[in-house]
Length: 143
Image (cartoon, rainbow, N blue to C red; front, side, top):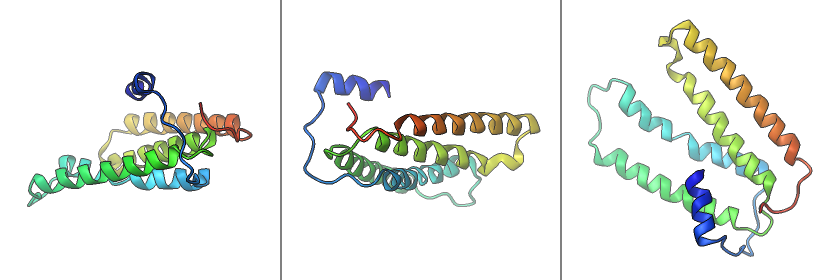
């Protein structure tokens, strides 16, 4: 986030495009879909594989997926109607995927680790609810 803020400050905000922004719910859902495959990469590291794929396959797939994600995010976020509600929806979609995907290996965790994760996830969801309430009436583009 700090690098994004620094990049915007140094380069300036690009002019908005004439294209239409998707509905915030669609943008959040798309962000969740774009975030989910990154956990497949983690499975390559943390899950024992009898025959792991050649390194170039996941690296190439990750680079292509990152480029596609950035292209879609850049196009949508430059639409004139993109606003704080869109930002909040995208952040929520990604945060929910990150929280949910964290449970994939939870069966092997000690109980206290699982309890702590549940507590943190509840706090994160509460924060997302607060964020949603703050931006619910905001229809202006994000600054």
